[in-house]
Image 1 (cartoon, one colour):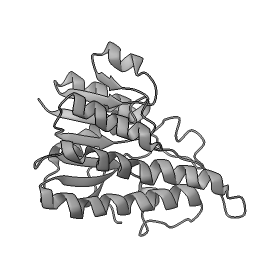
Image 2 (cartoon, rainbow, N blue to C red):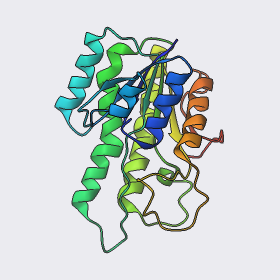
Image 3 (cartoon, rainbow, N blue to C red):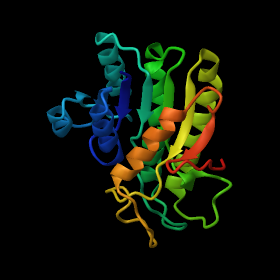
Length: 226
């Protein structure tokens, strides 16, 4: 049985990940902004009140892990936000908000969790292919692209630092998922459901090793360009 921390588990993909991992017999700790009532009903352990933009809240998460005397086999950071903008109509306050959540959020969480990550542990950060420099063929979405591109750099940096400790790290793209996050996303896509994305992300974490650490992977198994 693995001990797995899932961050941003209130709803959507991370919520599905928690339920699936619990169903297969893992010990799941869900970090939620809210109370996580539906997860508690499924016997998932919940640490509530975790706003990843708040240093005190993230420190509280670290304190809760210390109180539980936990060593994590997986840390899966899923929390994120998507805001739409275009050149000439950029809300810089919202851009800062997205940067706090999408970029600094996973860095804060991983840093506070370092004492709970021993050799053999795995870290997955859900970013987005929209943050790929090599895959940007359309422009636009400045705040989201920039914050996710920076999150990719955070994840690659974490790989270089943590692999020396025996901890494998991967950046993950969930695909085009039908959630509250994407309901206003422009264009027509064949959206998948959160459960489908969750299955793929879990599979990518299952197969992650130190030898494959430092990659950018699609939930469907494809390797993506940075």
